[in-house]
Structures are given as C-alpha cells and as structure tokens.
Image: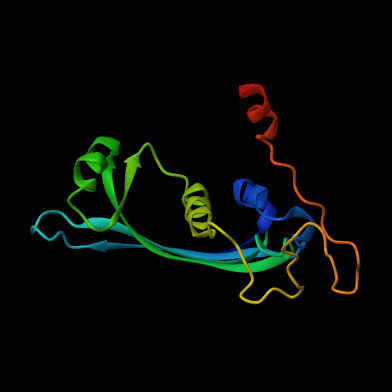
Length: 162
C-alpha cells in the first residue's frame, strides 16, 4: 500500500511545524507492506509490517530564527504480537519494534508517531542564509557611544547587609 497525504492530515506533526511556512502542497509519501516470517524458534510464523515514509517539513532554525526545510525519513520494521501484555513481556529481550494486534493499532497514528520521533531536537541550517545577530545592540567602531556599564543586580543587597 503506497499513499501520499497532505501534511495537515497529520495533525500532531503539522502542529509542530512552522505554520507560516507550511506550503499547501507539502505532503507525506508513505508505504506499508506486511509479510509473514517464520518464527526463530520453529513455532508459528509471525506477522511483520514494513513502514516507509518521506516528507520535508518547515521548522524554525534555532540559530537565525528563519525557516529551515527539514527532510524526514522513516524506514521501520514491526513484528506483531497478540496483545499489549505480550509486547511488554517480549520488549526487553528483542531487538525489533513490537506492535500489539489487540487493541488494533491505527496505521496512520503509528506513521505519525514515527515522523514525530524523526524531528530534530534543535533544527538548524548548516549555514544560515542571514547573519546571526549575537548581541542585542550593535555598536559600531565609528560610534563614540560606548555601552553603559551594567549595574550589578546584587549591589542593593550588599547595601542592605551593612
């Protein structure tokens, strides 16, 4: 199953992007494929799901505060187990990701969870397109005006101590 959906259809992901820069044609292309694999222990075969997705989301660069278009990609395999209790019991001993068949998982929600986990903690351009302002006031060398000496916030406390 392959699909393309508009970014606003992923409400939680869309809420995390820079809404002013989200273009209406931004979309998520994804594919889900299931397969049966033989069990390692020779038991009944197990159901697996392969989930792939790609998109580009507009985020806010934490250095220059401008928009940065960030690619996201998901390529994940899941093994289905009977229920949440089985998933919790097997989770520590297996390397693969587990999904419980009961309650039945919502594929769209699983996909959105994976895309949310792919968001960078601190989105930034590699090289910001505009110079980054590093101080609140820009004093040029030509200016005779020097920044005023900062008052010590604890000076009044020292006076009270006497």
